[in-house]
Image 1: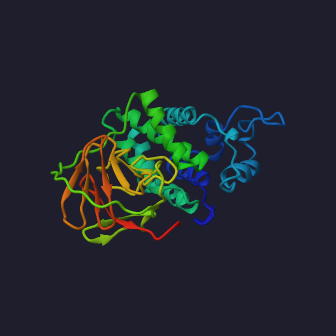
Image 2 (image 1 turned 30 degrees about the vertical axis):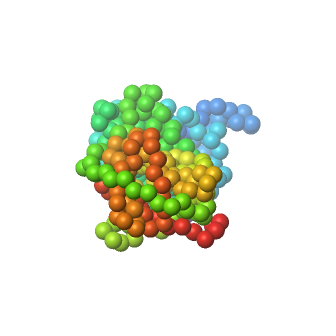
Image 3 (image 1 turned 90 degrees about the horizontal axis):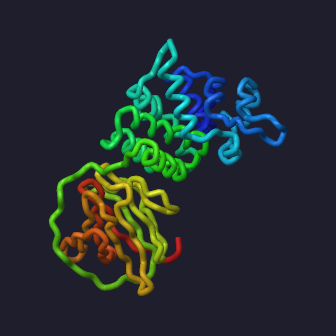
Length: 314
């Protein structure tokens, strides 16, 4: 067994399936490896019984060396696994058991492995939670969507592309979405500030007066970043509470060196609190509000950021 330091997302996937689902490495290889021949004429799937090859090139392969062509389509692999687990005579697993495997303590090694390879754990955990609780999906469809995400991130070690794949799969195959739990509405008043210079903008998450994470710095650009539970763009921010929408808000700097936030038709709303006057501005869907140092940015009821300005490029 590999140590925590050595554990990769792929290794974590194989280990979790072995411990929690009683699937051997050979069995799992037969379901997740591709049947397409490689340059030597043999397919990865045909090597499933070669323990040395599987260990070296799949299970214990360093992140960055695993090749996408080694794996079958993630959705196909997940469907094979679900069928195998449900139909076997010994220790069959239903949808609830599959969700518990991925979402419960048994699935924690995957989160640690993603952290080790500097992937966005918040995005992965948010996606697992949203998919596992999606009201638009039947219980079996939730388990299928969650397992697709688990397999995709295990094979690719790429959270952003895996979340995008899993959400697209849920929409296309299951006809579902990842809705945001509703929170209490927030009243609105308007307020304005002077424009800020084009310095990096910092978002420092606070809870009950305490800082709960390191500041996230955004470089001045009109492209900006998105904030949301399932925001998958480069530099996007996913350190949010459970009532924040998948794509909740967009933060950017215009050509006049002024920072703005736009609400992306979120479920629970976006509010800017003026740091000088304490006046609140409710940002209407599709509209924007100015951000200045000392302000607070509130997303839903769960997530508050203190607004900072940096001194230069970070």
